[in-house]
Amino acid sequence: MEVRDRLLHAVVLFGLALLVITEGLSACTALTRGPLLVAWLLSMAAALSVPAARRAFRVKLPAFTFDPVVVLCALGIIAILTLTGVTAAFSPPNSSDAMAYHMPRIIYWAEQHSVRFFPTPYLNQIMLQPLAEYLMLHTYLLSGGDRFINFVQWFSSIGCLMGASAIAGCLGARKRGQWIAALFCATLPSGILASSGAKNDYFMAMWLVTAVYFAFQFAKSVKWLDAAFLGVACGLAFYTKATAYLFAPCVIAAILLPAIKKMRWRMIGPALAAGSIAFALNAPQYLRNYELSGSIMGFDSAQGDGVYRWRNDSPGWKPTVSNILRHTSEQMGGRSERWNQLVFRVVTRAHEALGIDVNDPAATWPMTLYRAPRNANHETDAPNRTALLALTLLGIAILWKARGSEKCWYALSLVAAFVAYSAYLKWQLFMGRLLLPLFVLGAPLASMLEEVLTPTLLQLAACLLLLDGARLPTLENWVRPLRGPGSVLQVARDQQYVSDMKPWDNAASYRDTAQQSALAKCDTVALDITHFQLEYPLMALLRKRNPNVAFIHAAVENASKRYAQPITATPCAVVCLECAGDEKHLSRYSDFPVRTTAGKFVTLTR
Image (cartoon, rainbow, N blue to C red; front, side, top):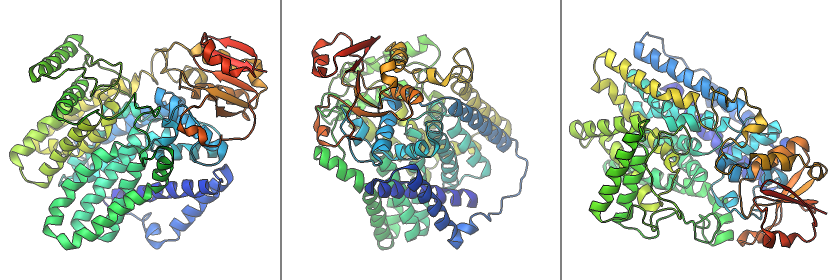
């Protein structure tokens, strides 16, 4: 426990340093390789100058005792981490969200040496919480490319394993139970698929589990230092993804409120300080968003027009119940289409019985219809069926045998967080990934398998079942497969940027546009992403041919147009994505009369 405790402290301090360094250098317009390297070297030197930090390296490891369950869990975790690490190393960032906003914002920040807002038709690039991309930006600047981008999520998965097992210890689990909790976390299909990509769900989950761990520590110690680490971890979660605002309060309140009830006056001051720290850390992004939209959270939709609004149009029990049913059904997807259709019919009939429209537009993403779940090896909607069933059964066992206990309140807090999530956000396809942090927080409850399955053979069987469920997500990721003809070990890196774009069938458009000779000689390219926001593959392909090329956005008509462009240079070419045939839109570029069409993309030059 001592090793994990010190590592979790170090993880939080690293996150704090990441935030301070990024915002500090950004304020000086100095986010470049040199200052960044100096800042990290000074941070490490300062950390090592503290005696407590030096003592952290002198941790006495526990003596090894052979335990078949522990050995199986350890070997299984090592195998999964090794395979996902190989996947992360041999694949570029290529999920569609990464192509649309995670990676483009990094390019524009690097160009302007700052994380200030810039003009963009796709407001997600500036207003969504940026902490994961801050770390990606650092790897991009220090390495000179996107080679290490995927490791942000991969290392986050390790942090979640440590945090989940440590929380299991806080809940009273013994060594074997803690290892089972770690294996449960490591074998989550959605987690395995996400750990080799460039999204931010695992990164946020890491801060959430560290916050929960320090909430347990604070509830027991009532120390200001533990409260400070709790506040920092919460703040980092909020700075990473807005769903943390829905998850964290429910879980942390369930941990702290019983302690506050016993030690009211001793707890209130540090608890308020923790909350103040969490929100104070987010002040830079709050201020930028308020300037943009009048709200510290930014606009309620990616285009700022309210059409694709994330939240339910109106609160109430009907949208909440509908979303609970639909989200749950998506986690139940299996290999049998007959099973998937059965789940679909059960959910639709439940809606009918309750008088709820299963596709109510007030609680459903526009132009989206509820469908049967599927057994997807895709990070956006991979089901965690075995994990959900296990947590449900364990939750029932807790309510039956340990009602009113710390473990019971913790389990109920996860349910409350899920209800809050369903009550606030509209249902849409590919939202299963957003529940990954809740499954990670549920992993500590899996330590109860040691108590429920008393014979060791049954525990081994349960671990083998978890590992079997991890096999296909690990080897046959639909976007980044390790085996098969599309393996990341066989397909060229350049070709993998469009692996998640099969629905649009525009791989040739990216490739042919990047190969045009006019663009090869152009150092400043304006990108028009009004019709299609997935711009990063073109950026990456052009930068491979011309490392000095810079980008700005064209045709920005929303509130962000008042910001200065990342660079002041005049573009020598415009690339309009998905603009072929749209003469009305292209007519705005009369200063660029020479047109070249590559599939659905149009390049305009003088």
